[in-house]
Length: 114
Length: 115
Image (cartoon, rainbow over all chains, first blue to last red; front, side, top):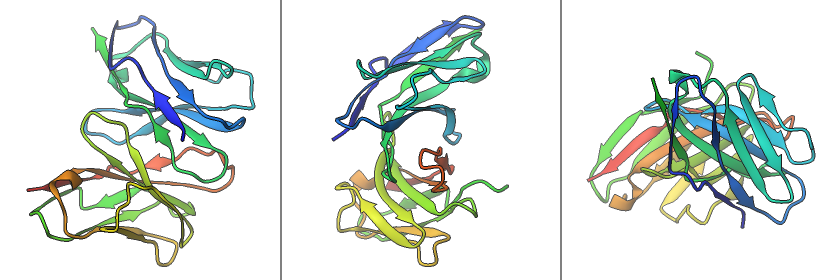
């Protein structure tokens, strides 16, 4: 069974600084998808960024980028120029090819200090 | 609003009662997922539909749980004989089937409290 581990229950960063959230996963599959989702307090979950395992190039979306290390099964999220609106729970998620549901980590609570 | 909607948003029930939740996915999405999220945890996959067919069920989905998507549009999740351990946020998500790795769009969830 696939597992996703987020080892940082909580992270704090000063506004405008850069922060990296870590995620590791375990799978025997060679092709799969990885996602970072953001869940603001009392609001619904939204996608931050996604990565296909067969693509070696790291995904980027504006201030958000990932460091995907397939051999190490690591998928970290870097947030540059942190903003107050980035404060949320961040979940790393895995999905194998096909139509399975997502396997989520336990999440990292990101605090932005003004 | 054309996002995923869920009803009700909150449900309080007594142990032993049955409850039913509804999810309306984004209209053109043929994949629909149910997840359960307890406090301080990430969502856990429960079940998945492709159109009206239920294609996968997690071992978390005990016999007291049943889900339907009769016409391939909205879906319902019923919990029979609720237990206090069923208290959680129940999330619904939808996605198109093409491309395969498309993101899932989540609804606001139904928070269930079993007294």
